[in-house]
Image (tube, rainbow, N blue to C red; front, side):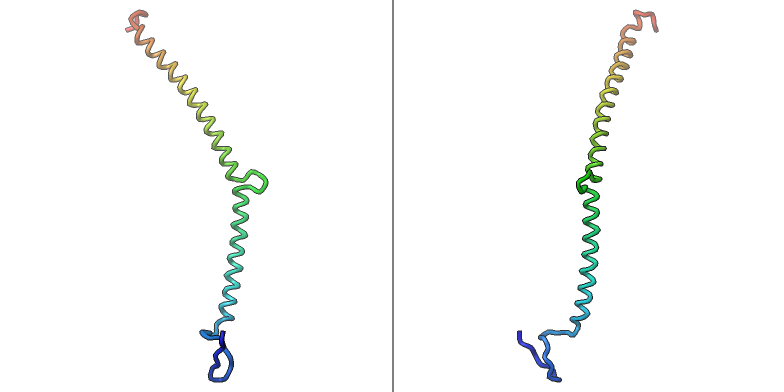
Length: 102
């Protein structure tokens, strides 16, 4: 790159605005903020996924699986109970004259 000379004879970069120090300081602050946020993100990801131990996602999956099994078991019991009640009501209706019920 060629350097231009200003009116005082000092060499300067073309398209230089004279704010490079301020931009570098701002870039440094920005990089610091980004690195801090990445560190927090990494910590949160390890907490969710787990770092050699079950994370929150795994624990939530386990709880969901247990709830689904419980729901399936309960629905089977509910169906059996509903079937028994239905059979009792149907038998009572069908045999009410035989038993002398009106």
